[in-house]
Length: 596
Image (cartoon, rainbow, N blue to C red; front, top):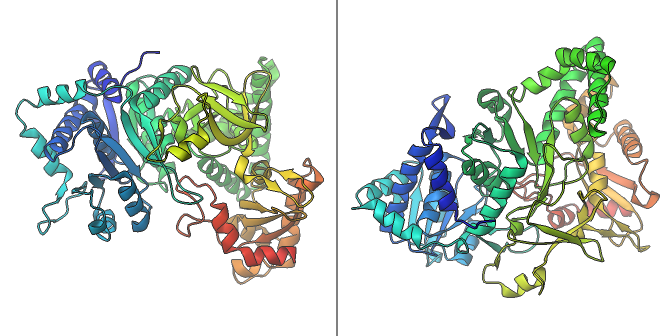
């Protein structure tokens, strides 16, 4: 595979798709496009402006912003100037932002708005490397000439004499092996580490995934996951730009359903939580309907399941089943597909485990979710299911050019052009995860089936060891429990204990509906989760869902919580993974009470 830089990839797309829409965002109530040509010009001027501000090859530029066109422009311009992009989640606290800026020795930071600027101003004097702050929104900064706006930087770039020659000279000095980005891991334990990825790391992933997923210039992506996360950076930024697709930005994570209707995407990437929410919304709507409507829905899904099973067996549905499928489509399934905009080719899932039953449900409805697997350290894709080669319950076969093997203890190891250069300024930490033969130790436990599909069973560090020596992988059990329409979130506990227990966050709306049906009186959620009837009902759900698990894997005790695990409470990472140590500490009294 030929190695090339992100800059070369982008220039190639501009030449091929000059007048085609590259980016689209909501402005004054409607989506407005930016063509590849226009995007190229904006990138050029911002790049030249950065150079005029003193940016040199290898300098770090931090990005603290929500998803918006300026994020994409800044990223491409930083790389075009030979800089290294240091992206950050917009939800980070001032202390977290300060740590990353100090550790990366960032020279410039781009922030989206006044709120993000205030975070930086709170500690700016403590970061000696930081010379400039660039704001995407127009902000009055007359009192501080080191704070400039995005438009000011572009205007500065427009004044550069012979700008095309300057850009070309810088571009010629950049090699595929040069650093492109420094991504700080979400830090579920301890301080985050900066993962160094090169142009070649990212482009090897983008090129391969474009080919195996069959993405083309006719595709439209809806982007809503944070671009600061490597999953969206690849799946919703570099990959679509590499093949001339259009990327439309959702207004916020809370408007995705509406934006799908407006954008009508053909491809969309998300963490499993979006698909869980869609599933819950569909089932809630069915429960609120008449008994006849409920029967029609379940009959239609049942027909869809039979069609799905036939497809998975690579057999053709019978004539009778095909007739039923057409009726099921007309009555129910087409409405589910219409909710995504009506032209979706496939979803992609990553960032966390996708419950198999969820993938099966959506396929029965005529929508396929292609689950993949990877880490920040692997650029990120190691494996992914394909539109023409998939298996539910797995994360697909390894992508071409990527090696995968299973160590003796079950850990997944990977080697290839996607593996990071290392952790920034942390050679000892790098040596702990990349061995002398170049194998990256993922920390995940898994297996490869007879057909080459990779299956993740758990995180190595998350394994619960009971006092009797039995090992319990929490992920499959937690994934099974959230299949109940009455369960929203679950975290298993039990390390060094005699049995497994769980902290369960109910689906509050569904639970209130059940309580109303059963005439269970409760003033509020806090009271409801403590009632005997509700606890008995959730116990029945737990027992029903875990019937196929070994006795030592079953939840013997549980506590129902009256509030969700959230990022705001520091219980989840920005990619919606549970911060298990934080939760264990926060609920230690409740846990001790269960075991006491």
